[in-house]
Length: 362
Picture 1 (cartoon, rainbow, N blue to C red):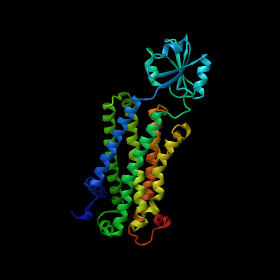
Picture 2 (cartoon, rainbow, N blue to C red; picture 1 turned 60 degrees about the horizontal axis):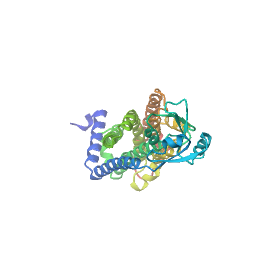
Picture 3 (cartoon, rainbow, N blue to C red; picture 1 turned 30 degrees about the horizontal axis):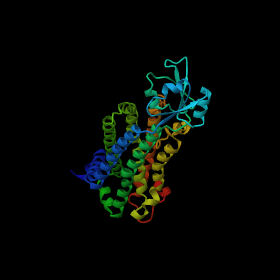
Picture 4 (cartoon, one colour; picture 1 turned 90 degrees about the vertical axis):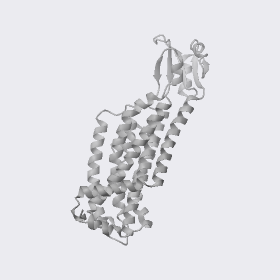
């Protein structure tokens, strides 16, 4: 086939295919993927083992409630003079929970806790008692912290693993002058689209493998309820991830085109690296802040991390992820238009780093 007869879509497909084949044949890519999957599976298994061997649950209780729960395994009872005294120990964080008599409860007991009632204590009682949370939104629950790290690190690592190589590939082609040959056969926009779509496909494939590994590990460790709760958030994460990664990869390609030497690439991609790392750190530090999490769930670069967490805990309305997706798509269309202009105007400029104003000039 004559190269000049290639359509833009066909040219983009060929470039994307080359990106996929090159990475899949790389031993480093295969080994890193295997290590990542094994690490996630091992983490789930270890957390399950640790959860199964938790330390004793400390409980404050007045009589006669103290006598009723004193024989429960894994519970250390602190006897108090009154229900109010038991409640004060919970407020001061001296015990995990309090159990007090309650004539209105079916079990005759009520569990009092700060942010989360100990599941072991609930399961130990013959019937589920009434639960009163004094500060349901005031603390960091283990599951929220775990999900924050999981979604954040998967997004950051995937963006680093598949996004940064887009920039280095562009610079390598410029440095070796290969780009001058490619650009005569393939339109610049097709070259950009192929690189972005090829690496996005690879990143999504890795996400699918990770999701499958998580599902298998949760089933193997008999955590079916956790898996059922994660189902919808994981699907939303994959969708948000796809759009977020398209944005990241496009920015990497555009910023990579600004320089002609590998030594200079760190100067241009540093802002993009900050964009990639920011959601990970923000969601770790502010995952228990409803306002910050809500704002981040509408920001395209952080929504792949924050929105699935809000969905898992039932904090987002049904329309919120849809609106966030629309915002992300609109942002992507704007970014791709700007990035394409930068890419086209910088690709054949060799030597010194291309300035932003020159790259954006028509």
